[in-house]
Image (cartoon, rainbow, N blue to C red):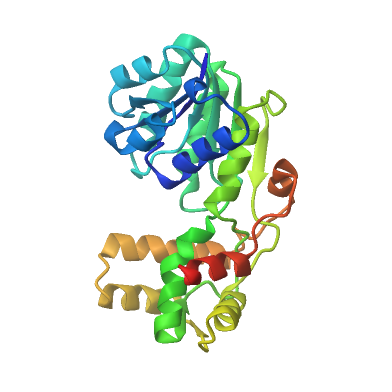
Length: 285
């Protein structure tokens, strides 16, 4: 029997595998799957099994899941196609009666977050599947702001339309470690876990942290959604991407990423990684 990690060529999936190994999982019990198995060759040298997993190709799912006991379904990154892709994964999981652990979004069933609808639909598919499953409602990754942090150091300013809204983020490593904890135990079967960082922060705190760590004075330029959209387009972003970014900032302004109830820290058995620690590590590279 095996633990299958989909999306293993991505940042989160790879870190989940690292955490599984660090927590004593036998390499031969892990299947790392992705569209490009060649990118997983370093894991193969450790004894981890690798497989081609393409959410759009059911045959790859059936082959990769042949002896699966647990499957980590990392949500796809193709917005608008994810529900059908996730349905294919769930259908393949049903053939072997595997337990599914799914990476969802904060309060997906009720949130107005722009990313929530496909996650809500996937959670409903899982509930209807009859499979044992756990939902990890991951909040924001602090890495989502790595480019913003670097730009802040370079320009001395952070442009945002978040209007002081807070973000309860944590680095991918924290979420990856939590996923490994869940995959290696049956304790959380059937649970919906809201996961987020311990200390929600806003852009003023981000600017202050960058200033403290880098020594470069960084200020915040709060603008309206319309002004932000125009600025992003002037920087070369296409209409769709610029609209998506500003919609997310509007969600943050509405407080949709601010909640933190300590569940992630309890899973980890330690506090989540602070914003300052993340910024310090990023700027030290």
